[in-house]
Length: 370
Image (tube, rainbow, N blue to C red; front, side, top):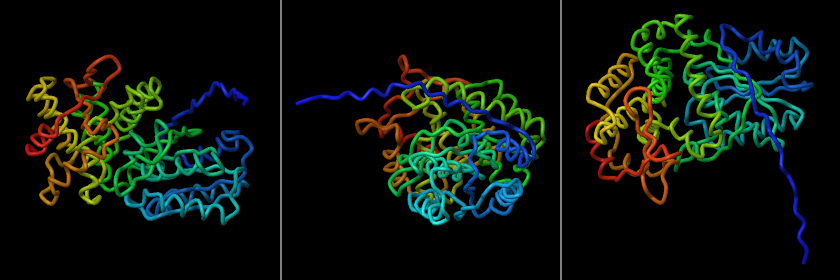
């Protein structure tokens, strides 16, 4: 018998830039010409049916004009498309068009697009580079930063995927002007969540400037884009693979994701998250970490953004309770919640532990209040 040890120790630098601005289509092409992804000449532009003509097509045309091979691969817009079947469809289409390991993916769209495209990039040819061009506030606040890529299944959301960092992220605030108000409001949900968990100053800014943001005023929007990136960076920097601290980014998601799924995606992610954030605030109050006034400030800010704060009547409460157990924070069959501490902080239950077991009876009581 013999043993051969394979030594594969290595140091990895996954650093990348996040560029925020208005109308960045020409900038992405210029960066690629300047060597952003080396000498790659073939680009697969992954997008959805809504964004395709608005932003993906102009980027594709500029890429072709600059001498690159670029083609668009799109799928129907919406969370229901974030599946293994869609991923397979995109991969097969890329293969059919001659794409191999010598290509790069450009994801143009919101969170569904960046999640799915980043997952494709991580497995296609055993890994190819990708760039995120975020066109929604939700993607700017959450999905385009941090390297979490995944698809949903009928049993759970975001549990099939991998951590995969992009070469660069572009946050084009000009694209927010074409968003319906409902989509813009949905994107605000993650921004408010970031303020609740990490910045009382940002929370106050949102209270004072919500109307400016909802009208896509440049200064206010650039400020929240920068603050979102900064808050998420400080978490991801310390815990890239979600072994502890990064769980705080799931604030409000235990109930929020369950509501989103049980609604059969009639609710947008941010709408479901808003309700989930009120649920965790009520839980925090019951545990002594927030006052009634603090809970009311959170509720009022979500309402000011035009987001729901109660569970719709059509949601089956029993199905919702069952769905809570598909949350990725569940351990040993126990529900676990991240809990807000005041405005702008999170409870650390013990060193490095940011989620606590909660009995189903307690969760039911909170849901009954919504």
